[in-house]
Amino acid sequence: MSETASRSSAQHTLDAVAHFQKAFDAQDVDAIMAAMTPDCVFEDTSPPDGTRHVGADAVRAAWAALFTGSPDGAFSTEEVIAAGDRVVARWRYAWGDGHVRGVDVFTVRDGLVAEKLAYVKG
Picture (tube, rainbow, N blue to C red):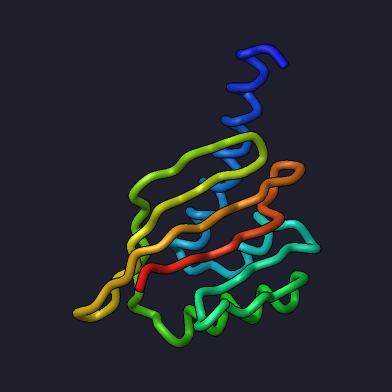
């Protein structure tokens, strides 16, 4: 693959995650799901190993529960790195007087997020 094609592929991967993140920041579950594949996977940060949500219905329910349970919570992205069909995003999640930091590992397929694996510090 040429350097130009590689950069173009990385940009498409970054664009897919940026589209997802915009919907996520707006807490728009319909737009989030439109940015994900029908067979999507989301692994949340619940201890000890996270819960794995598989398929659009399960992932939609996980997003709805997150936003309902923490309507004032806000993610801010600290860094985004693309590698092929993967994106790693470092983030900070703040609520009230608390916060936590973590990392998401995304897999992009056909311009949509197919997988979002979330990891948290502490």
